[in-house]
Length: 310
Image (cartoon, rainbow, N blue to C red):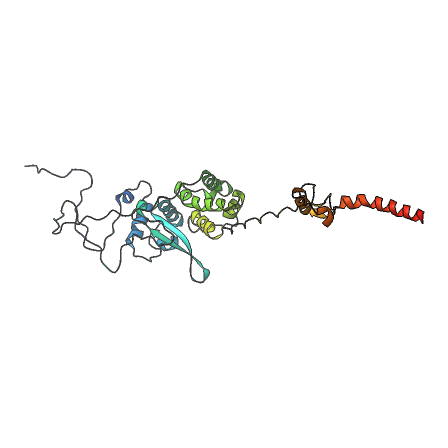
């Protein structure tokens, strides 16, 4: 009896691939082969396969999976810590706060810009996705692909200061639930630096971030801290008023006995000018006070002599 020769390996998975023209999901191998909990990969695959607007809360996922709240909550936290998910607390209509979840196909290429909503990795529901063709059965394309410009990467954020990193690391000592990952600290540090640059003391920042927290979090605590850093930052302190000008003390002129303000004792400006520029007719026009005072005894003795003669 002849033995057939197998070209494929005897053990292990053998793929029987079929070209898909729609109703499929693209998932990074790095996520599909993620070590750890299989629930985490399954939750990630389910979320990526759903269209935009699908609820992905713990309650909604419990309706699809048989796992309980604790297991699904842990899977969401692991996906958020690795960057595949991002949950933001935004102010909705009427002042109510809503949680919006962003799903990233590749976290390292996502534009983290608060002014523009980042793209999600959910498959579009209106238009079918392009076919997924296996490399072994791919057909030559009739068109030559045109070279495309590389995607523009966002400017890397400024490195966090040691003061901001130390403050965020110390939050876990006040509340164990606030133990943050390195990715979360790097995202929150610019907000802490903004508070420090505006003159807010570190103790006040810690009180603002750790005070009056809810008993349980429906999302990662980092989202709550990010909202507090953005919305509760105090107004910058006003600039101190300019110092009042110093007023020189009042002094009496030794020449004319007039009061004037001067930092040092001396003649008034008018007498100082006469001293620097003496006038030849100063004695006739305006005799100084010393001459008047010296002439008073002479006039008094002359009047006394005249009275005795009489």
